[in-house]
Amino acid sequence: MDTVPAFARPLVTIRYCPKCRWLTRAAWIAQELLTTFPEEIDVLLSPGSSGVFDVALDGAPLFSRAAAERFPEPKELKQAIRDHISPDRSLGHSDR
Image (cartoon, rainbow, N blue to C red; front, side):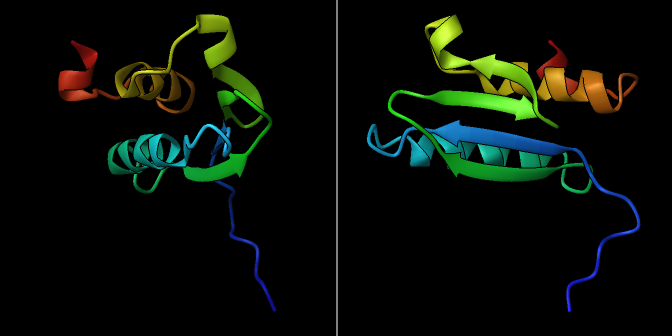
């Protein structure tokens, strides 16, 4: 029997294109985020449609490769997540 935690952590979803072989990039981004926020967030890697690489926080878009015409930098994702979950928190070198 599964139990539900007392509180749910924010969920970061990384949708990536498996046909483009972007799983490795998605896993690297997930690792970067979980290293910075080890107990504050959960991360879900989700295979998507052709060419997709999107990052969302609790369903709200944080980054779209299609809109930005590039991949996200870990620093910008860390700052965006921090701004939503703990605005006063310092990210050290990622704030520079």
